[in-house]
Each structure stands twice: as C-alpha cells, then as structure tokens.
Image (cartoon, rainbow, N blue to C red):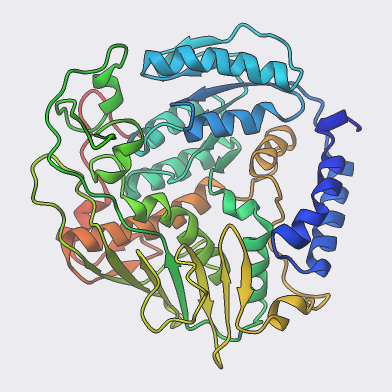
Length: 463
C-alpha cells in the first residue's frame, strides 16, 4: 500500500498537526479522523487504473484546472481526454496535463482535446469525467455522461434550475453510476465537526442558521464585441438564448458574459446564491439533517439590479429567509446580519444558533463557538456520526473503484442547490411563497413556472 509521496497514510500522518492546529480542530476529533481514515485505507484498492476526461477545463486559475490537478495527483489516475469550447484553453490544458503527469510521475499519455463534449463522451476508454463548465451546461453534460456509462464528478452548483436537478438525480439513479457534486466543504473536517456537534444537540434546538456568502459584483453597460478567436460562442451559449458576445475592459478590469464572469448573470447562473450558496447552504442542510428535504416557505429582500443595459443582473445585496417545518429558520445573506452573534468579522461562513445563546460558527479557516468547551469536549461514544471524507476527489475516485456512494451524491447536490434556486427566485419575483419539499412545487402557479427554463434548440432536457 506504500506509494511514496502518494501514500494516503503518509498524507494523513503529515496532516495530523494541520488538523489540530491549522484547522482549529480539537485533538480528540483529529485522532478520530486519523483512525477512521486509516481503517478505510486498509480496505481501499487504489491500484486499478482509471482513465479520466475533463469537460470545461477553463483558464489556468479555473476550477477545471484545480480539480484536474486534484485528480491526477491520485494514484492510478491518468487523463486521456479534455474538452473546452475555447481553443486557447484546450491548447494550454494539453501542456498543463503533461506537466502535471510529469510532476506526479505518470505515463506521458497522448491526451486528445475536443471542442464538443459529446465526442469525448463517445470514447469507450474513458471511465469517468470531471465537469467544470459554466452552470447552464452542467445538467446536459452530466446526463449525457451518465447515459454513456461514465461516472461523474460535477462542479457545484449542480444545475441552473430545479427541474434540471430533478433530471440529473433521476438519471443518476436510473443508470447506477457514481456521482460526486463538487461541494468540497463536505470533505473538510471543520464543517463535518460543526454539523456533527449540531446534529448531536451540542447547542440545543437550532433556532436559526445564518449563511453569509458575499455581494454580487456589478458592472457598467457592456458593449457588443468581436468573439475572441478560437471561442465557439454558439456552443458556449448552448441551451441559453442567443445573444451577442459582450466585453469591456475598464480600469484594468474585464467585464464580460463569458468565462468566470458568467456567474453574475441570471442567464447562466444564480450569482452568489448559487456560487457560494451551493457551499454554505449545503452545510446548513447537512447540519439540519435535511439532505432529503428542504424548507417549506421562502421570502427575500434584495437591492435593485442595475438599470444599465447589458450589465450584470444578479442582485447586489440580499437576505433570503427559509422556514423549515421544524421551526428552524435559515437566513442566507450577503453579509453578517445586524444583531447576530459576534464572530469577529468573519462575514463568509455558516453560523448555527441554538438555545441559551449558544452558537457554532464555521468557515474554511476556522471553527469557533460561544464557549470553546462546546468544541473541545468529545461527543459521546454513541453519538451520531456523519459520512467521513477528508479528500473530496479521493472520495469520488474511491467510489468509482468500490461502487459505494460519495459524500455528495446527485440527490444531495440537487436538494442543496434547490435551496439556492428558491432564494434566487424569491429575489427575482419579490414574492413570498410556500415550497413543498416532497412534491417539489411552489404554491404560486406563476412562480412555479420558474422551476424550469426553455432551452434553445436543438438542446433539450430529457430525463
């Protein structure tokens, strides 16, 4: 089982100090994680070779590049294909994959690049695919991959609409393929500990959960511009309406509809509500034990969007209130809410508020509580334990090999992003409405129509 620098046991042992000090975890919990992970390793077989493809590789700083490196660093993994609608990204990625393979002492494969994802998915030698396209492509690519027998790692948010999430979850179940949504905070020990403490009543009955996810960037009016050489703009738009390519460079900042900035257009995303909301609202759902359910009522307060023509159109600031049937309220906002417990200026994160002034706050840098004993005191031996994953990509690759569900399945990813989409719908309509988490319908017929969107021909959603 020893694999030099790739040994998982070696990784865990080297990370022990980081678990206790860098992550702010109590020693009892770090010891528990180490023991559980080493038990898992004894049963793991990472020797089986996996041929991977990636769709939506992106720029050098993109999530596509990040998860590609996460995967290729693991034992037995080789990339044989990549796809991007931008030729510049494809050309850079070919070299990037070669350099990464060299770094991790992998075979120097011939990696073929594709413009059209369907050609990559037709390859019989690809075992699994990583999807890091813009949000509006996730559902169509994932469903095609599942039906062609591929296991799927799909970046969050899972989909652009709730109807798409329903379709992806349905097809994942029909095909029996392994599916991991890139909500990697479920593989972060801080978030798992926070949720375990909450689920085991450490702060009493949960009254509120606050998720702080940041403001949406705004832009000036962005003029029509020539499509960059090598970019297939029609294919980038895919199922969304045909519009002109637009770009503006102002004060050394690039404003555009494309690539990273797609996030600030409701046409292709949900702004911070689905960008960061898919992370923090996912943790709220996990902590509340709502992975198979969701809220029952939704309302929002949101600042007006820009009146500038052809500009970013996600609401700059917002507060969305989600009521759960058990009386808990989830408040998702752009910043810390007035009067909420002092978490020392940590605006981005998840705050669980319980009884008697008790609270637990967690983000990617720390976990803290109203009283440090709430974290430092071990849970009882019979405490409820949550799914353990300390490496999100490794968890997916283990699932591909052992055919066991991952920590963030298509069902979980769908339920979590549903919360985010409901928030965006509330912001856009200005209406308070009821949500039925069983039937997955909104009580207002007009608002209920926003659960799906028409797709531009020839693309269509088929579950």
